[in-house]
Image (cartoon, rainbow, N blue to C red; front, side, top):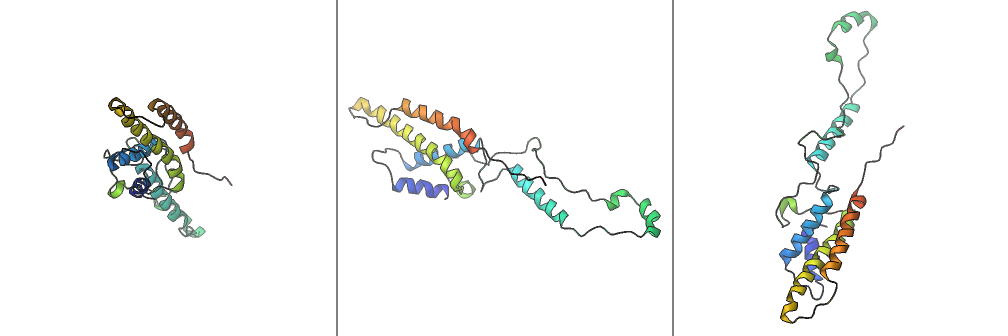
Length: 189
């Protein structure tokens, strides 16, 4: 689902007692995505390095699809051997394992708090499963802060306190590094 659709779905099912605006809800989803992207890139928004690797894989596959080299008859071998080696050799392209200095390795997320254009990311179910709980905690924290600040006006607060929510946010953020980690499976034959 696209991020803008997730915000709209959350606002359509707005929990009872939520005092936040659409802008605040959108900001918290973007913050949760930013935190996730510190440990993994979004599948549908690859980093510059991942795009470079994909181009190199295409070039490598095209190189492997070339026809076999021409076999030179023995009588012509001497003239063939005297030609420059560079003329005959076409080294197999290699896929970069490490980014060059200055190459962006994270999903490109801008500093705005909205979802428009290329910033309206499409989240996979796996990404959604990791980002959504953190987003809900960010929302709950800001809502609890607003409700606790209204206590001076005589309002009775309900739900968890900001301190309890901050502890849980810390736990979820601490687990994110381990949960978001993924790697490419390589088979050696």
